[in-house]
Structures are given as C-alpha cells and as structure tokens.
Image 1 (cartoon, rainbow, N blue to C red):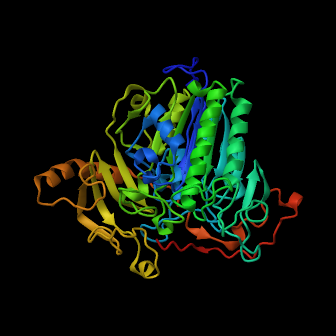
Image 2 (tube, helix red, strand yellow):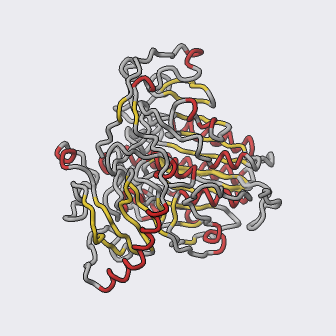
Image 3 (cartoon, rainbow, N blue to C red):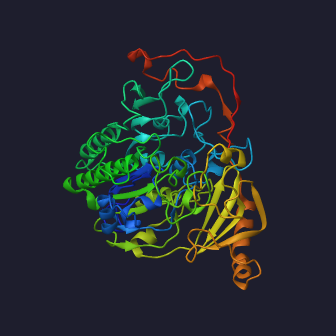
Length: 522
C-alpha cells in the first residue's frame, strides 16, 4: 500500500509518529510520528485522572487538546513484554516475550538473559522504514541487549539510551554496569559516566533524553522527512531519579519530582512540534508500559488509584494505564473516549496512519483505532490479561472475568514483597495460584476496584458468561504460542564488552559460559 499523498484527516503525505513511554509512551504522527511513554507510571499519577497534587499540567493540557482514554491497557503487567507488544502489535505469548520455566510467571530481560526480540517478529519501525520513515528510539529498549537484538537491527536508524534498566551500581567483576548507547556503540556506563545518585535521587538523564528528542524533531521537522520517535524514559522506575532543578519540588516526594520532570519534558516536546509548525502533522500518544510498582511506593512508586494492586499483577492496577492521543486539527479537543484500547493498537493504528497495511502473515492483536480517534466510534473487542504463559483474565465490555487469581506467593509476602499493599481482598488477591471453573466476575463500571465478585447464581452473571466464554474458547483454540525467549540465563551474556568498549577502554572480561534455567519467582 503506497503512502497517502496529502496531509489531512484522511490523506497524508508523511506521518510523523511519536511514542512516549514513562515507563510510559508517546506516539506522535505528523505527517510524522512520536510515541512517548514513561516506565511504570500509574493511572492515578496524572492530574486529569484525579491525582490531588495536580502536578502534571502539561500532560493534562495534552489531554484537553486531544483525546483521553480512561480504558487504556498495556499488554502485560511487566515492562519488557509490554514493550515487545507495543512494537509488534502482538501479545507476549505470540512474540516470545514470556517464560515456560514455571506457571504464570512474569519474566523480562535482565542483562543475564540470553533471549530477546526474535528475528521472526516484524517491528513497527521496520515497516515504517518501507514508507520512508526515519526512526529513533530514545531511552530504554529492554528487548534484548545482545547485538542481534539491538534496536538498529530491528528497524531503528538512531538510538540514544540503554538496553536494560538503570540498575546498579555494580562492581564490574561479578556484574558489569549497564552501558548507554549512541546508535551502534556504547558511550559509557551508568554510574561511571552517566551520573545517578541513589542517596539524593539526582540525575540529569531525563534532560539528556529531552534534548535528544528536541534535536531529532528540529533536524527532521521542516525537512518533509517523515519520522517515528519512540521516547521511552524510565525516571519513574526504581531507583527513581530527577535532575537538580526538580528535586524537592513535588508534594509527593522523589517520585513526584520525577513525574514533574517528565511532565515538563512532554510540554517541551509538544512546544517544539508547535514552534516548528508540524504539530498538525504529528500524531503523539502518551501511555505507560505497566501500572505503578506499589512494592516501591510511596517513595519510589506511584499510584494506580482507584484500581486494585499494581505492576506484576493482572488486576486493573497492573495493566490499566494512562492513554492520551494528541493531534491538533484532526482530533476533537477535550474528548473522552471510552473505547477499550491497548498498546498493541498503536502498532496497527500507526501503520494505517502512515498509509501501510498491517502484516497478514501472522496474527495481529492490535486493532485500528482510526475510526475511534477520527470519527468517535467505539469498537467492541476483548482485552486478554496474560501473566507469563497463562491467560489470567478477560475483559469484554464492562465485565472482567478472572479465570486465575494470584498476587504473589506466601513466601514472598513473608519477606515483605507485596504487590497489593493495603488492598488485601479475601478470595481475590490470593497468594496461591487459584483457578476458577466458574470465573470471578466483576462489573468494572460499578466496581473498578474489583472488590465485589458477582454472585454466580445471579441472572446477570450467567448472561454475561454466555458472552465471555465463547470468546475465551476461540482465543485459546486458535492460540499458537511463539518460542519462549525468556527461559535461559547466563552470566557470560551480560554487558561485559558491548560494541564501542574498546575505544573507551571499558571492555571487561566475561566469566565462563554456564547457562541455566532462569528463575522467575512471581
């Protein structure tokens, strides 16, 4: 399908796409595209959803100028799988970002993992490149750190960021510090060359990422060159950080400082799109990769209020995330859409806006949201809540059926690891994996906190399950899981000698290769 030839609601010369993920995401199209997304920012962290401190004026303004999605979901309650789904349009169980080492376990890509995004998967930037797009990722990649998994091997033309989260510091003997890349080569390592102070929470990394975004937009904004920018920052992921000018400015403590700096940065990015004159040609989407990590709250984690639990769980707090679409002149400003939507939809929607057909040689789980954002329609569709290799729950309309429940184990709880602090609900937030022949059913309109399961004997329960049960059967019967990528670990696979380390004198000696079966406790 050829790119469309004029830049208008129905016709585009170029679409600039921008995705932001904070432990979130921004997706922008201007006759270009920009997605933005922060890491594990919660639904309840922004003012437009009722956060009482009202410290996100730019994100709130973005919502007032665009479309707010209160029913927006990530594809997984953990960062790596949700990011893989965003860029492939496919559930983690299909694209390989899951584990079969144990039942219903969350898995991701720490630096000892051997796996990553498979070559068999086709990523959004690979497809956009065929339409002439220049593609850049800024921030955390998290889809594998070995060279064959590098973002420039999967459609991106430029990269400034890291392959893993900013954990550390390490001693470079038992574990190497995480590298930071510019394109193909590392330019330093966290805690050695990229300053992050655990004691004070100070780091200027968000400002570095902001400047990278501004330079990229300015470079291509007025050139007629369509671009895709994926701004994947992680300041709200523990260990949380903020630059000196934001430290101590929030009523919410350090986490709030990080949120305020992200909000400031998003405002700057949108301002640049306006001042370069390409705002009306750019589609931007803001979301998060999973719900806030309540285990780190309140100092290092956010809010999923009014929803149940958080990151790592398939309750609403783990998978319902902020969603805001922005495209001046094309989207009805200030609209609230109750469309049930998912990060995987950004894959399909981006392709359609760029004048491209989604792949037909594989199952694509993301739907096209253009009828929703342009015409105000609503599309009936299910949301599947997976945890590892298990389908835990399904939402259809206002109803959510839990086929399995599990927060985390009794053993972890005894160690102080709690994904649902202060929210114990008997028979719901279980610490054993519980399977239900008769699923727990909730009406999310009347009961968004999933506190009151409907009576199995009620007419409403029986009627609703007559609609949900065949959807689940069809989904399971047609499911062909991908090869699991998150089963095998090896200390020798860590970031010992990344490309470019020779120039910097930062190559390290890896240990002997001794692969093992990764252990995923929850």
